[in-house]
Image (tube, rainbow, N blue to C red; front, side):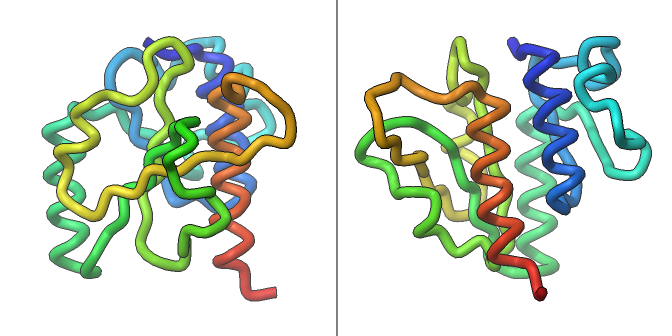
Length: 150
């Protein structure tokens, strides 16, 4: 289950920060009015936004690895055991996975091909977690900064 406002916000942030596309799995309608409203300011047709099953995502990762080599699957999770997001090399081919605030990421993520890297956003104050749209935007911003050439 996903929160459409978070999804639209994340799509808008990703678009502005150079994300190549979004894959939605299970529960969020990318074309719902709430997602569209939250993504205002961009043309949703300028960046691929697709709704797939986990099997389709797995096939995509396999095909991607066959064409570009290793792919890292970066899974956002607030656990203290996870690697801080700024220590990940986002210049590598990466897929960033953000789960729902209610249920987190699906266990199916951990069965995808590719290298699984679990990450967290270190916090300066005690807080259970960030909103999914904010967490995703922070991680995407780091990936964007590492990939920028200016």
